[in-house]
Image 1 (cartoon, rainbow, N blue to C red):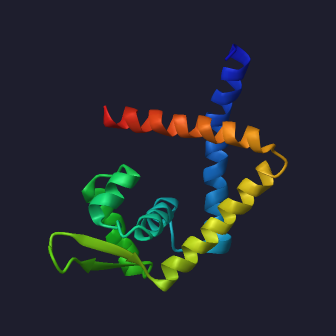
Image 2 (cartoon, rainbow, N blue to C red):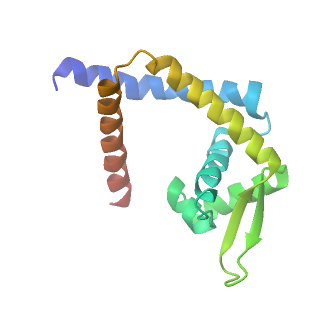
Image 3 (cartoon, one colour):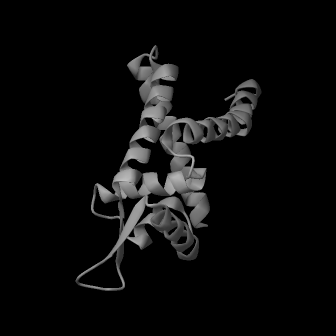
Length: 152
């Protein structure tokens, strides 16, 4: 990779990520729910992802989001009060707490996923499949790198 390409990627990570967060905030206000913060919406999305695999325990969600258990507990408490999540204790082990989306949480997550899908379709609709596969491979490598860096 040459210097110009590195500069372009650096600009992307510095500026596009901030614009993406800004777009997410607009989506929240317009479409999803004005009651949710970006962080709360990401917790809702994580619960939805893990709930599909019956892994939506507090421990799994904290690990998935790279949050401390205390930070997640605070976020879940707020989201339960706001009506987006419910908690359920395991019948086998009361120390294990499952978190589930409520109907309100499911609706907010659905609207957010529609926003994300529309954005991704808009920016990738004319990509050749091989190019899209290469882009996905690079992003997966970046994700792996970041996961390893967080674990150090």
